Image 1 (tube, rainbow, N blue to C red):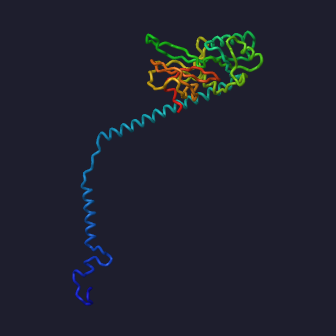
Image 2 (image 1 turned 135 degrees about the vertical axis):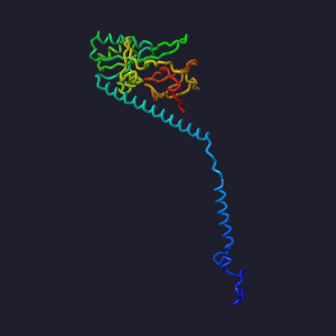
Image 3 (image 1 turned 180 degrees about the horizontal axis):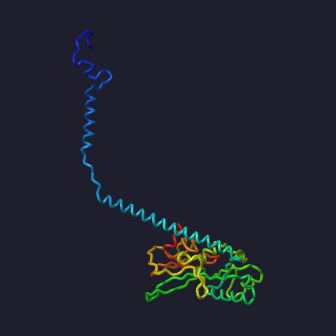
Length: 294
């Protein structure tokens, strides 16, 4: 305890010991500041780690890959938008034509004969003013034969079916129904049911804009929906198996479910069964045209 009036000593001087407001004293405060200054000085003296060229290369590759993917997605979106635009235009054209579209079922492999017989019968029996058009849609493709040479093949887009644009009346119905090779009209409970114009457009509209905006009729009177590509498509490696359930992604049967029936081990092409108007129909597809049903 300090006596009143005693002289002030250095050890008892509050100004030298930090005062009542600074219990740690000035000494402690100076030590903290020195540590802070020392840490900042050490951090500033650390050398900057240089950016490696490999890091820049990886970043550039990632950026290029992202741009490439974005470009591919944009191109695919443009193609899809172009197809839908052509589909709308062609659907409007079909709606302007007289009559409705119907689908008749025939013996498989007799589609062209049914078309020829029906056209002749409509003229002979004088109902050509009610039966306007008979269509067997096909697609043409190049396939390699056993010698490795390209061969042009034709495939029915709707095997076992024929499209007819007509006015439905008793006379026209009778001519169609009694044509050799015709088994029935497709419809509810055996009644002929018109097909939506948009669905008909999907069957008849060429898949590629380069082919044209309207279907082309060849020398045999067949309606060509798809023409062959210049080069045979390369085989696509895939792990699909027979019996798998898949969804078709493109073409006239887009969004339709199918079951893989066979796979060509040489070309990788897939034959799948699709239910068309209540009957299983084989269609040929490639691996990039389908996806698994999860």
